[in-house]
Length: 183
Image: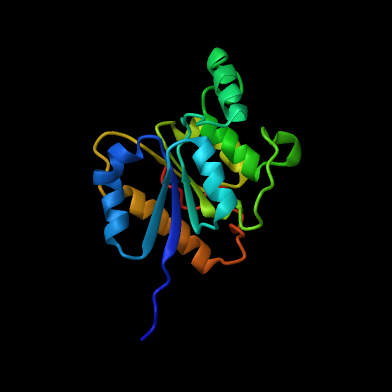
């Protein structure tokens, strides 16, 4: 009997406990995903540094958690909402993990498994407001949170990332900056 691979998913979302019943239920019931939730940037970094994930889903508007470096960034960003990243610590986390050295907001030892093909964005921000950042970072998948989302939205996003990586294990996107991203 062949064992089906159990994919590890990290969902970085401060409202995940609220969304758990509606969005995460389809992920849990699929029986092919082990869903881990980080409710802030500090928890997310801890998970990423400790374990490898097949897919990482990132919200843009995240609280900092207990790490003073992220708390300082959060407070500074709130004071200057219109500049650069605004209050989007999720975007700052993506730059820290995936960006070129000069764009890394906080210097961390980035694990070798971390690459843009494992990341997707699930947030209230429109794709157009994030497009230049996501393109620069190589993140191909974005789904906008909005009222009335299907209960399968999160699972479908995870499936897309897994399918892309399964059909394209070398991680090249064939020249498309957004893949089949459902903006």
